[in-house]
Structures are given as C-alpha cells and as structure tokens.
Length: 588
Image (cartoon, rainbow, N blue to C red; front, side):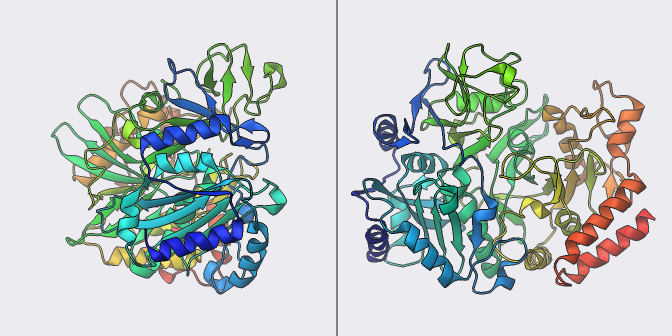
C-alpha cells in the first residue's frame, strides 16, 4: 500500500463514514466470500443483493435485481466537469468542477454509515502492458465489488504499479439512497476522478467501465496521443492460417457482442479479444494496435440464445473462472434458472418477472427487462484469443462502424480512405435502444458509437481522429455496416447473426487485395460475383434493397447530417465539411 493511495482512501472514508473498510485482493476465493455477503447480509430494496441459481443449468451463477428506477445508464444525470463548458462540448452535460464537488460532497457526507466500504485496486489492461492504467475505486455495493472482480484485473499488481506515486485514476461510488433525484455520475478529467452516487447499475457504478475506460480515458488519449473507443476486438483466422484483426463500433444493443463471438464457417476461426472497449495506440512499427482494457463481458442478455449466440451461452454456463451474474432477468421458478425473451421459443409457465413479481404473460410486458445483463469472465469464452493477454495488443487491419437502421444505409461499404472513414463514422446514425433511459426507435447521431461516452468536445474528438490517422503507416481500412434493414412490412431482410460473417469474408478479401469491389458515391461496395450469398435464398428485390443507395433517403440523411454538424458552430474540421460537400454533389 502507498501513502498516496492510503491517504485518498482515508479521505473518502472520512467523507462517507463507513462502518468498515475492506481492501480487495481480486481472488476467486474472495469473490465467493463477497457473493455470500450479498446472499445473506446486503440488501437492495429489502431483498438480498444476490439469489443463487440452479448449478446444474447455470453453474456458479447468481441473479441480481436492481431497484426499478435504476436499470440503465442515466445520460441526463451524467456530467463531465471540465473547467469550461466549451471543453465538454454539446455532447456532454457540464457542471463547473467546484460547483459539482460542492453538490456531491453533501450527498456523499455520511452515505456509507452502516455499510462496508470496499476498496478495489485494479488495472485497466494487462499489468505488464505499456498501455494499461492503474485505478482505485471505493464502493459500498457488494454487487459492484463482485462485478469489478469479473470485469477488471483487481489485486496487488495494481498497487505495485502505482507504487509511491499519485498517478492513478480515482473512483468514488455509493448507491446512496437510490433516489433518482439524488443520482449523479460526475467525471473530472483533469483530476482523473469519477464520483457516482444514487445508482447501482453497471454503467453508472462499475467505474472502470464507461466512466473511466471511455469518458476519462478518451480525454487521456487526446492528451497523450491515443484513442479510447467503444469497440469490439476480434481476430479472424482464414483457411491459410493467417489472422486478420478487426475493430467494430456499434451503439449499445446493436449486436456488438454477437459479432465479437460470431460463429465462423468451416475453415475459419474467430478469436475474441473484447466485445465493448478498445484502447488504440500506434506501435513502434507505425501500425495501429488495440488492447481490450477489460477482462469480462457485461452484455445485454435478451435475444441471446443457442441460435443467435451459442458461444455466449457456452460462456455464461462455464464456471471455470469467477461467478457469473445475471441482472434484471426473469426467474423460471420450476427450474430455478434465469430466463429472458429470446432464450427459448416458449416462455416458462411459472415465472417471476425482473421486479420479482409473479409474471402474467397476458400483460404484454416483457418478463426480463429489455436492458437485463450478464456479467461473466472473458476467460470463460470458448473463442478467446491466445493474444488476449499480449501486452502490446494486436495489429488492426480493418475497422467496422455500424448502427441499427431500417433503411438508407447499405449492408456493407468500404470508405475510400482514413479521412473519408472518419467522415462516415462521424455521421453514424442509429435507432435508439433500451441500453439508455430514453425513448426507443428514434434515429440519433452517434458518431463512432461514442456520443454518450466521449469525455470532451466531439468536434475536437473528430480532429483527434484525423490527426491520429496521419501518424499511421498503412492505416486500417474502414467499413460501414448495417445488419438491420427492413422491408415495407417491418421485417428484417438480412438474416444477421452468423450470416454477418459473409460481410467479414468480403472485408478480409478487400484487405488482402482479393476483391475488386465497385465504386459508389458512398465508397466501395461488393460486386455480387465476389460477395457470398449462396444458400440464403434471397430474392433479387431483397438483394437490391440490401445494397441500394436511395437518393431520396440520402437527401434526408444529408439534411440530418448538416443539422448535426451545424450544432457545433463551425468547429467541425474543414476536412469533414469538405467530405459532406462532396457527398452531396455525388448524390445529386
């Protein structure tokens, strides 16, 4: 332990006044002990924090039901407290740092009375990696403590890395009284500090996740010359034995995890390195390298099944490393196992819903919350890459950006170059989902799938992407994807899931110079002779719609892009404005 760490923890204890301070060591034995505390002592809304599930079906697994008001990221209560509002940008809620601290200190004063303060020393990234960061979080939630053990590298190595310095990211968290009116998630990038109170939900409470590894880390990346991104990291080994590494950025609940664990056809192997966060650095050879700073999955569970994502089902049923947590699923009382929409064709007859009430199927309401989650160690994943713990990361050859769009955006398209790719990614739009607490089904701009997570002004972020690309030798190809096109009856016209591998094969062929493609106003799209559609039984009409560029739809799209850019008061980089102008001319 170090003087700086000890002093900071002591300061937080004097503020929050816990009955006891417990320093975590990150072992699996400790995780079991903490689970026992959640089974027998700590309660949420009058119920035990954890509930033991059927070991024969879901071994070493537990159910957690959060407070009904605390089921998603609360973007309107999330603030980034730069010294000036301009630094935070339109994409962030801003509060002046001194004002924010004053407000929060009143809420934190005495908030841990009668509770245990868990001190969590952890690293984001492998402890031996030059790209990893050391952190300390304190919390009064045993659910958060166990979740952080699964999601991050908790233990003495983090303290050893910090040594006698004060160079560590700090996180203060308390569930408080779970009152939405007293709920805030505040980031102080200049101090490397996150303060979160009033929520026990993952994205608000596991401070190593979105709070540090994206919001704070993106600010560090801008300062230090790297990128912190909302991306999967996967490797695809082809029949020749060569592995091509990809990044993929999709807004929450748009299939990131399914893609990270996609089933490969005969002759190919998928190697999973991460399903949510990637830190990107330029290696000594000038290539782009990526690490996953996490060590677990925190995924949306509805829709996950043996049909859609068999590897994830295998992962969450594997008890080799750490317990698995389910949050806000339904409970099948006959089998004492979690259930969610999409797990099976028929719902169990005898269930409790995600709020612990007897489920009535005639209500029309889902049994599991639409944003219910699983938390599981990535080391339980059958497709985990042998390069997962490589301190240098893996070299990236392709980046895929995509959203949930029923029209307008083609199935797959390669951008012309890095600058054009940054433009396309900066205009990414996606229909909203239940992963954040706002209305669903509306298209909102979500550049690089980072709008809720970029810790500074988005226009400066675009400039950072452009400058970063100039330093790369042979930058990765950038692709735009859309698995979610619908017909006039509202039905998906592309089968998705494992069939998305057909697009990946085309991308690999483009990277290796084995596919010509055809130039369009949007970029390079597949020739039908080089895109594998065999066995899908798709009509010519459907194939045309998958790849079409509809001028009327694109006029509307361009108008919305202009409005989005227009919010930034001429701060958008000129290079991107020029790309918009070029596209308008091409669409005409």
